[in-house]
Amino acid sequence: MNPLLNFFLLIIIASLAIPSLSIAPFAPTRKKDLKRIHTIMNLKKWQKVLEIGFWDARVSSYLAKNNKESDFIWIELSPILFIIAKINLFFSHTKNLKLKLKNAFKEDFKSYDYIYIFWMPDVLKNKLKEKFIKEMKPWAKIISYSFDIEWWPWKKIKDKPSPEFLSIYIMTKE
Ligand SMILES: C[S@@+](CC[C@H](N)C(=O)[O-])C[C@H]1O[C@@H](n2cnc3c(N)ncnc32)[C@H](O)[C@@H]1O
Image (cartoon, rainbow, N blue to C red):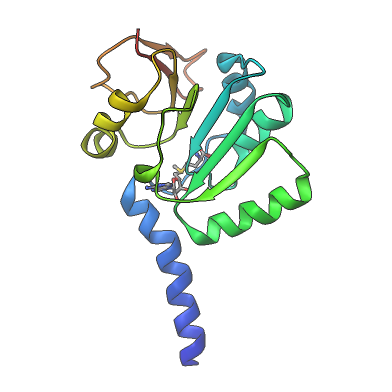
């Protein structure tokens, strides 16, 4: 095979594989759950939301379109997924969304009212527990899709309307 093609393939594979080693497997939130997430969050116009890892950016896109006066920040580690999301955003003309190509461990969580995650709890515990506890505002909430964060020291509510739905956990510092 052409060495240049090999090189580009290697870059693409690395760009997709490194983030999956970091915090989560490659899988997006189910589309059928977007409305439920929106209802659970019940966003106010001044609130600021962080989604860590955006896959095809479906969660933030949906929320941003339905909450035009809230602000949304997406952070993604994979350059390939970032470029795809950037192109989507350009065509969607969504003004209240910003993308960052960044490692979540380097983001300051202080300014957010909601942090949306779809991560494995063990990875969170090892790498982000102290950061969440130290930086999150007292009234901020973590929305964890599918995974229960058992180590969470404060209040936690589980939403699972029926067995065929995945759980959504809402965690606060109360
Ligand atoms: C399970 S997917 C969830 C995607 C999206 N939030 C959703 O729910 O549809 C996890 C995402 O996190 C990204 N990711 C992994 N490690 C990361 C890190 N350290 N910082 C930012 N994003 C990361 C992956 O590239 C992937 O897009």
